[in-house]
Length: 103
Image (cartoon, rainbow, N blue to C red; front, side):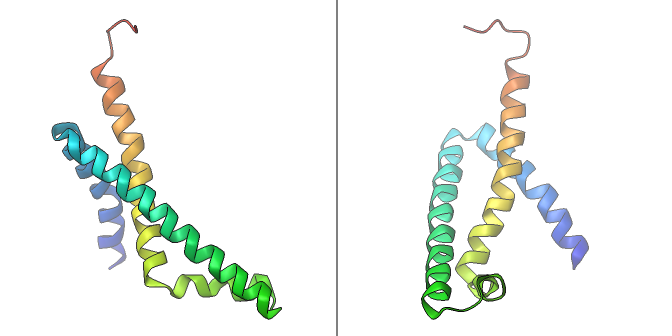
């Protein structure tokens, strides 16, 4: 299972970059999903920290409950795919413009 996860972590950003390079609208969709995921994960994290502080519990031990939220894990997983995608996308754009003079 670990091999499948690592292979997907490597392959999916390449597929995303290729699709965004071919279909420009998908780049916008990927950006919107990243912004949505950022706000979902941030909102969940803030609410968990607020609950821990409100209860007066030990922050360093109780804050890990955030990892139990499926929506936080989904948003985090997408961020883990989105950042390598952005790096690859920028590399593709740089290679497309190589040899051309900047404006």
